Image 1 (cartoon, helix red, strand yellow):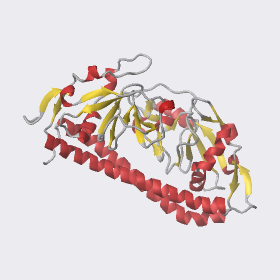
Image 2 (cartoon, rainbow, N blue to C red):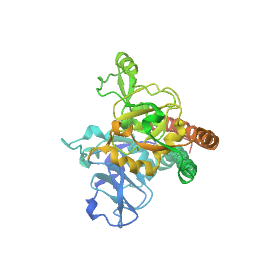
Image 3 (spheres, rainbow, N blue to C red):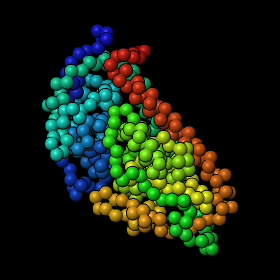
Length: 371
């Protein structure tokens, strides 16, 4: 480390302040984001904090850092940066992301972070010009990631619009109405008993590990090879063209088609729908993602706190079966859109891995940037 970098306390770099109470019932109609411990939790007509600003989770979800480039209301479940003390705001955001604040938890039932316990942390900070250069490198990667996410949203909306036109608005009254199980080999879920976690093993996914286009392998628990193989024998491994569905915690929040046999097994919070050739997997997944489908599914969901799709009712869910000739015709348009989305997802994953690898190296000074 060169002499340019300054050894000090976190409280010398920034001042953190507890956010302000705002119950849901008191939120007024507005456009000001309310920043909670896990991101935006609502909108209000008044801000407590000027942009640019940063919050970290204080209560519940500890330490997650969020950057806001618009004025916002800092909720009392957060600590927000009250004073940047002349440091670059974007650099501070990335800097805070390198800390494991969970080790400073002072709560019992509810995890809680006290600013007085983290202000004294020893840190090493580069001078302002280098802060800006580091922030520029990392934010350029995040900008590319954000652009790809937005492109995928546009492509998905386009695919859904075309699907609705061909299979809903222009649907023939003579199309057969069938149960969902009629177009599948099976509709099942993953393991109902969770094997022990091991330090080094094979991935087991739950609904919390899912995202819109797949499963975050890095967040999956690891289980032993013998437990993994037993669950593979019990058909808890998704195969190519299976439709993977978030069964617990939402109304089909995440639905995607497995592009190949997945090198993981799943818990019962995830369902597998295995098409039998009567309804193309891609088309069926688009249908299941539609808002109208999700609304109809509310009738077969149980659980007040955690919504849960009931599979025996899901199998009997009614849908119109389009002719196979029409399915083949429309796939010529929809498959390229789907493939472009997958290309973007793979690029997002590559950029995220690069950003996450660079972050600690840049923040420690192990890797330096040219000014």
